[in-house]
Image (cartoon, rainbow, N blue to C red; front, side):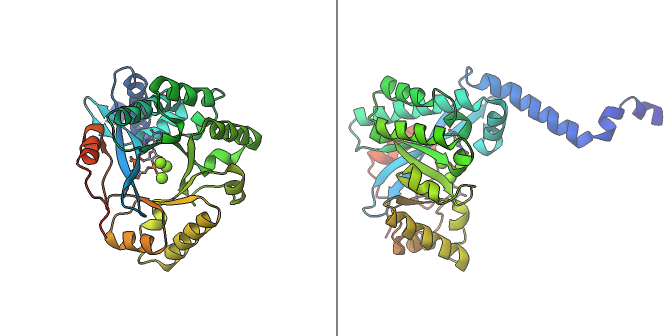
Length: 283
Ligand code: C2E
Ligand code: MG
Ligand code: MG
Ligand code: MG
């Protein structure tokens, strides 16, 4: 019996590790083919302006629909896409798709919407990144002020001159910039001044317990006040309950995004929502 097992010792010593690396390899092989096979979709989640209750715009969130595995969330494949560099073609595709879709809604006569696109640090550090943004705008015909690039604080970990130069070029192009997941990254507050972003997205980890955890309430209150003093818009992410919404309104938060209004949805459903001009703001 032990002899039988001996032949299989490779598996015997690290069964979980092998299973995991096999799973990862299988996922990578499939991810490499997903773009050409047309397996990605862009979902849109409304961003609501709390001052007037209208839809300000939407965040584009990529979904991978595998023919056998079904829908895979970005939390599962974005890290792998970043490790393998596949995030560059995938991210560029999402950017283009979001611009084309937003232009299409403009063409159909909907009120102007600002579409946000997540930009991974690896994408941002491509030397032709500004050109890629320009191409997406040119090819779609979308007005630059209807595009917002969401970057995270972690982008600024190194090569500050390159980042400042790229931000300056993007600013000249007329696109908007927001800092995503604010408060969870590494960078110092001084970056906020140097990068002159349009919107600060307060990470959902602070919002989750904002009505029960005094520390989170203090942090959120301070972040909203600080962004106002810096003339940056504040946006709260992951707002799920009416209580959280009311707290954010009371603090003067500018915009929110979360299940309390809507989950991310396919373009057709998002279009239906703006067509019906559904009143999103529940006061
Ligand atoms: P993110 O950019 O911070 O996006 C917000 C995430 O919060 C989304 O998860 C969204 O579905 C989720 N969310 C929105 N409202 C609520 C809420 O009320 N409650 C809760 N619990 N969650 C809410 P999703 O779509 O799974 O995306 C996860 C992350 O994956 C994103 O976080 C972003 O970092 C990344 N990601 C998604 N699409 C792209 C993309 O096209 N490119 C890149 N580079 N990253 C992407
Ligand atoms: Mg985001
Ligand atoms: Mg976020
Ligand atoms: Mg994020």
